[in-house]
Image (cartoon, rainbow, N blue to C red; front, top):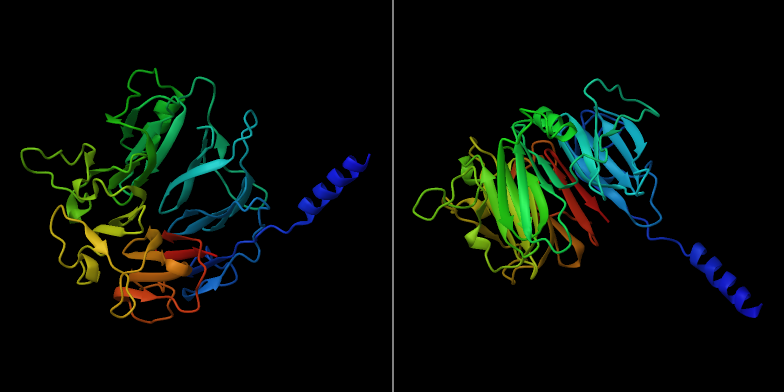
Length: 386
């Protein structure tokens, strides 16, 4: 009896222990109220935007999708969309209980997501959104392929990987010309004509698959990075001509990052980034193609080359980087002690530093921001999770 009392008391204390709430700060383009629904003006200094969002007691709270005209926030299984589309929806696989894991979309907003079990949810083209509407439809049936990762590029190209068996060491990648062709294949893979436009195989197991304007970046669990797609603006980060070069439309390894134990990649616009286990960050591509604006760290980078990101205080040693994100022409990092540094396009205030300058070429610290845990960039916005 006494042990039961102790157990009940312990359980009660555990339930009463407050969870660590997370706060979301944001800056940038807000014409559709996707950051702050209370007004439609740009936000040029980072401000807290999560006051009306429900917190998940398991700490699973943050930005799930950041688009041009909408943002989707995730609180455990609950997705809340602000901006051009507005809805709130619980995503729970009725069979497995799996929740949302990976989002994909275009400039209009999030088109769909994968759950933890590889199930696919898609927004119907004819969907009308609003309060209490559930726009995402569960597409998966027992015969559907089980997807591992998915990415949608700005040119409508889709790339996917498949779930691998625990001991499988071969990654299969399928590509489709657009989201419609992907869905036709997914719903009926055996139907004549429903074929991927390309199929690739890479040794290993995939960790991240991302897309920007017109290229894909794949990070493997062993730390190797592969890129393929449109080779303009140095966005592949590797040579495509030469005796041993891989063509642009095939996944080619980034030799410049080989052996650096890359643990994270980020991408946006025509720019890509990678973060190594020892806290070094790398950038390649072009922040603002066709304009005179160039990030200082990319100014001397040649074709097929990758730049090391140095975020320093005065003449001190470069700070270790903990997280990195890339938007359409701007980039943001979290450095030691959770400090946030930003660089690039600031035409909508997306750097969050309060400046009226349209572009900041060097890394500038966002003042009064410390203890940041993660960072996300949309095309014209920056989100900091505290």
